Image (tube, rainbow, N blue to C red):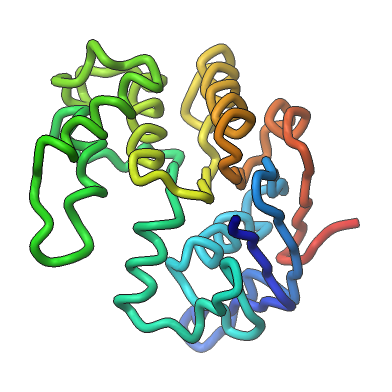
Length: 226
């Protein structure tokens, strides 16, 4: 099982001659199988924190550990492998590839990252199974512009889960959805969390998601709020 540790992390961004602090000494521990919400207003540092946990960025100071691995000590190939094998991403803007069908979008993470990967019967079947898991078996050949917002988010969830990650990071996953669709999407992720023990870490300022999380970590101005 894989835990997440964020230890006294600071993240600064350079904006011209100005340094803008996004995170200021944040520490969190997330145990395997938790469903945690990182809550706070826009600009509080939620997305920055998820990007650091997802190994998409490096802290300015402090440490991020996935399991017992300090991600700052890993080279590019090792980071790519860690992301591919352990971490799934769900983005508020879906980030689907418009020219690919739903099943091709879901299959994509199985084909990228290392030279020599190519489509096989196995990768296509894994993508088909993941689409069926989110209720979209009949929409495999549809492209993103032929799907509703809720269906596109379900494709994004299937894409995040197709690699069997132990941690799924969801950045404002209901931000572009109506209330009923957003509730259904969160319910699906709760079900997967209960059934498979997958760790889910949401960033949100949606009070409905906060109410359904096992634990809420609140950020304000880049710090853990009391």
